[in-house]
Image 1 (cartoon, one colour):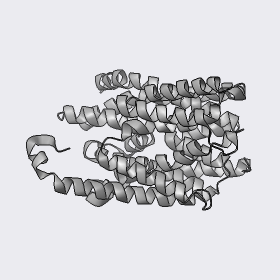
Image 2: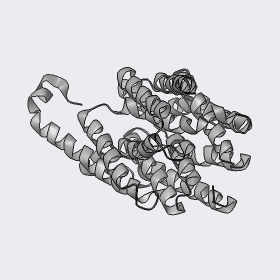
Image 3: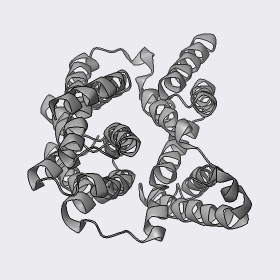
Length: 240
Length: 109
């Protein structure tokens, strides 16, 4: 178990490069929005989900109603239900406290790195898999807290001419580009933009929820259609 | 921001509970039962369904310019999206966006 932990640690370490600027930026932007240090750290320690934290923050700044803030941020986190389900065959037999800890630290990076390892080495025991998972999380989680704190302390000292208002949209777009993997993903993104812009006159947050719902249906429908149209490609081993 | 400190704490607390519930859902409670394929298929699109709709108004009508269209900010958004699509690298995309934003602000000021 210990060697699996070390193995996970090595594979988790490079993610710090991604996490550190993201967390620092959250701290900076939240401090600019006049959140208290405790609130900023509360976000990063209790919610521990970058995109959702940024979304909640930007909607709070725009004075959106609380239900809309919560609905949007939780909608962004819904993908983690999928991660949770994907881990069941590997970690479902672990003790409850370990599964709870795994769940707390279940985000894009830990999920992606652990599933890839479990699939590459199916002979791992449940204990080894848990050790590996905690190994990945070991450098990432403290970096998330620490860089949030750093950003929060820097925050208020950064002058307005740095145009940090726009760090948030750039960060979201940077996250988004690599996610647009298929035609179905592109279509979902397009539907989301068009519907959100055309419903911008609705109370804050409402148009976005409708847009997100429409985009999810569009993406899933497009995937179904593409799958139905391409059985020959699947025969050649092109399936996912 | 018009929200009180108590309201912000409420958001943090409910988001923490809700996010943990989502993460704990299958691993902790539902167990090894398979999810309906349609649900899995819809869940796959949540990030690409939410993020673009949230970002588009920020790009077209930025709050920093009082909601009027701003060429440097639009250029930054395009640069971040283009580099993200081409390289599939989040950090490079963010960097490209920052370069375009500062370049645009410098040239137009």
